[in-house]
Length: 550
Ligand code: VG1
Ligand code: CO
Image (cartoon, rainbow, N blue to C red; front, top):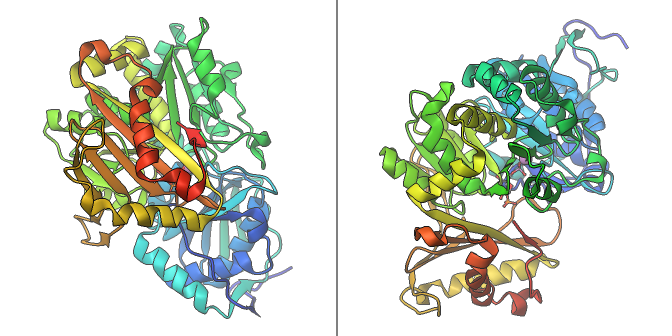
């Protein structure tokens, strides 16, 4: 097909709108089969493009985690963005870009935004999930006002516009011109690696590896494999045999690319044994999450964030200190103690990385994290799995102490926040909503009441006031704080694709030196029982046990 240099041939297609294209915590996620319905993907993309009203001649970044349906969706995306007047696309080779690398590229290239084809930690394959995140010119995910506007636009759509283009070959780096559209295929790793080299002391880290400190990393056949091979093995000298599942596969090889102690139980077992490496780690499908473990020492995400903040001055990119930190509300308050010690502000935001972006843009925070195995910093506007692994390697290399000692010393100094998340998969979504409504209706009567293990100090429905743009986000999770500092948090997940997932977050602070080495199971058992009883989970959903404990 030959296309005139100035004119992009465009077809207009009429169709009925879909009523369910509301983005959740991180983009639109649905079963692959839902996205495969005729016009479904196209109408959603049109709703985003109509909402954004990109200036003519714009630049966008495109990439994804390599999951099933990415290939087809990318071609559609190229043709629809071209029809909307976009004239420069920066695309990861083979359509691959990790979420943090895409965020970095958007910022570096001063693009107007980017589409990321991923359902993150959700399973992939023809029966799995597919998703799309849209990121703005600042590299961060679209804020609530935009996602609400996209939903409204999707409901009113009567069709979409798509350019007539040949299938674009994404397998070779370089620039292709298709009429007025320039498609630039880039190495997904190169710019990201340069960014990492500016933040960390790669020389010292390579010496640490050379000294016999072994690193095991599992990419779960998601996007981080190519990044880990180039950065951990080729550059830092980690053994290739210690990098697991590093070829991205459309169905993640049947693995569930969610880096937590359950999906990563093989790493937990490895670290519990005599052959434990100095550091073991894993990332999720799109490369923004991380799990960190050391010999007999899984590091909880809340502790990881707190220890990173406490050690930030040892890392080149953070030597000047950070202006402040933030954590999502359900995340353990371990980092709050370090922030207080450093006399820097600690912000509490709703779940979802997009809420950190205003604070990052305004220069009010330098590090932030979520309990869901997500940590990041001002280097990008997404959480960043491999960055967290590199941060830990750099920290261990400077401290010259084994990871378990670093963690134990932290607890001795600041106390320990025992933390667990209990997920209940509720088949009928309405039962999940009813349960939350019921609990919410009883919140007023809780303060002051005695729940057996403690009295209730505070019970509320978290409402966030964004200190940068003044926006309000109500109903971001129910929190019940007990006398003595223990805390229960309840919220419904916004990333699932069927039924409802109730997430309950349990936290208990301990500073008695004799009680710092309990198992979280043991330390939190009474709180877990109380949480289930308070929310009447069995009565509402018929469940007597959590489906997942992490
Ligand atoms: C979950 C996590 C949240 C995270 C979000 C996206 O959301 O709890 O902390 O930001 O996933 O992560 P929810 O609404 O299901 O609790 V990712 O790595 O899946 O983009
Ligand atoms: Co992710």
